[in-house]
Length: 144
Image: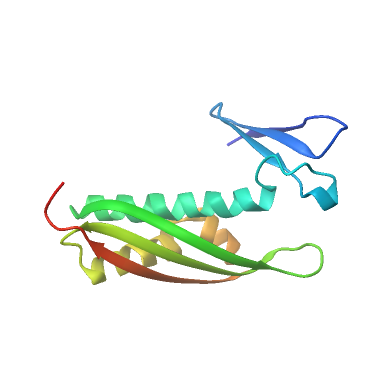
């Protein structure tokens, strides 16, 4: 896996990241650090990437078990250390999983498998942060 990040000039703290697969993401610093607040902070992207990683896992696990999953959202709250390096020290993930006929046990199992076996990002962050999870299950009935 490769990535490239380029500083966009001396007028601020904006950066353009390009993934090895050719996709781009903007990053910017906070105004107090010389940024212009034009894009997410790099550490916000770390959280968003972690959310994407774990949502991907949960949806895939549920689909592979033939569950009728219709939506999955994870809201993440994190705390960082007060001193440098300001690593994440606490992360809480709240999932809202919607579908028809989903069972509490299968959603819990999908989230647990992501957290303990599949989500590289959250497993890596668990080296410095206490990560907790909970979820809300929404039954949308049989209508597609």
